[in-house]
Every structure is written in structure tokens, then in C-alpha cells.
Length: 59
Image (cartoon, rainbow, N blue to C red; front, side, top):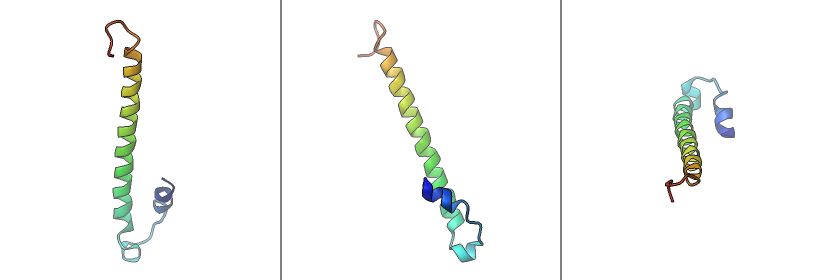
């Protein structure tokens, strides 16, 4: 995440950076997807934990 934060601040022409902007965009997409997957997983874990306390809940 720190590397991405640094890369996103660089505003130089593509000819100088060798496609850095495109690479940064790809990394941002991967980070956002990973963050979403992690959030969903943690929420589902919480729901499962809460359902275990109910009669007839999941085992």
C-alpha cells in the first residue's frame, strides 16, 4: 500500500515513466478488489459467528 501511495503521486509523462500510470491503475484495481474480498470475508465470518448463538443456527 505504501508503494502505491508513492506511485500515485508521480505525475510525469508516460514517455519518461515507461507506462507507470497504467501500472498504477492496475495496482489500484487489484488493491480495491482485494480490500472488497477481505471486507466481505470478515462480514461473513461475523454473520456465521452470530448465527451460531441462535437455536437452529449453523453448526
